[in-house]
Amino acid sequence: MLDLTGKNALVTGIANNRSIAWGIAQQLHKAGANLGITYLSDEKGKMEKKVAELVEPLNPTLFLPCNVQNDDEIKSTFETIHQKWGSLDILIHCLAFANKDDLSGDFSQTSREGFRTALDVSTYSLVQLAGAAKPLMTAGGSIVTLSYLGAVRAVPNYNVMGVAKAGLEASVRYLAAELGSANIRVNAISAGPIRTLASSAVGGILDMIHHVEKVAPLRRTVTQIEVGNAAAFLCSDLASGITGQVLYVDAGYEIMGM
Ligand code: 0WE
Image 1 (cartoon, rainbow, N blue to C red):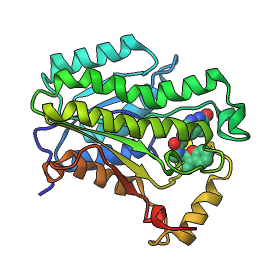
Image 2: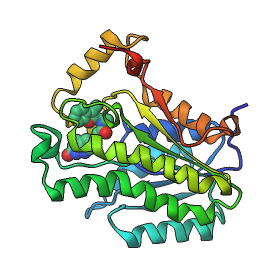
Image 3: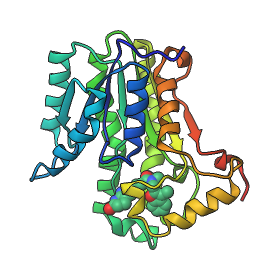
Image 4: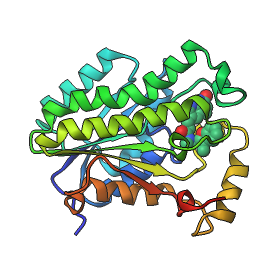
């Protein structure tokens, strides 16, 4: 059944124990994957210490800083994977950032710089990491990224992140088309709203969560572990025929008309 033993999996985007990437890492580990973890380094090394303590029970065999705005860190991350693992099977992309000012107010007032930042960190980073992973996925592979309904609907205040996620979902299709001949599959999970470090910084997130709890067919939100289970499935041979897709893990919210 769902078995990832012998597979090397790189997980990006763990910031703390509420991160969706943390739910994914736990479920990949449970399925037997060998984990590599990247984190966003800060000057004081506080993040490094925090994330290292968190992931220790999952016995990662690689633990590397990787800021996607720094080409050198990306280069050295994949050089280390090449040296230490030889090959890569799974890449989990859970990275997004927009300036806080660009996540409220009028979308038409988004600055060129704010637009560029959001698409650089949240969209281009998938293309960049997939390009770096491609030569290491010599036995085929699976790439999974995280999206949100704001990619395809105008969700209040999501603004420039909606444009970034629309670009991300299109990038999933173009990457899937290119990488399919190397038996590398590329898919996105569109997760319902979850309280995380990123979403808790957003005004009105609790109201959105309460709305989902009323309207979604399952009458609740989803958990990081449920997103993790869907990611583990997409990375497994059980999903060998699935690529280029956006899988909604949202308690059914997306199908509803209100
Ligand atoms: O993709 C996201 C979060 C994206 C995000 C959040 C922040 C907050 C703090 C990106 N950059 C930042 N930058 C910050 O400084 N989600 C799907 C969660 C989310 O974010 C929203 C949402 C939902 C849901 C923003 C506005 C409206 C709804």
